[in-house]
Length: 140
Image 1 (tube, helix red, strand yellow):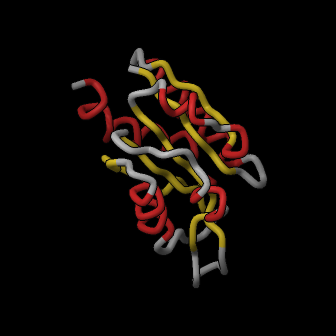
Image 2 (tube, one colour):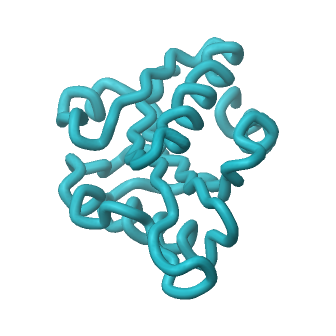
């Protein structure tokens, strides 16, 4: 199985999470490549079985949270026919960010099979939990 992990990062937290996720997926023998959202192209998406999309939580601390970079999310290549996983990173409270990110990725045509809100202070633990939850679907 091949996967691309598309991430949007401001401070480096989401980038770190994407690279950690790639490492975890490689341990499951899934070829995983992290790519910044500004560098993704149709070829990167066309050649994979799984698309992972991650972004940071934008908005006020406890109000109006949303996936950062919605214009960039809407400009992603078509994800029609692709299985997808989403994640958002957050500092205090992700609010409805994950649900909104699912909707954005589904609007691009993907079938979202899972998602996870990743706390900035627990990147390794939350990424490990995300992979544990997804392993049955990814290795079936």
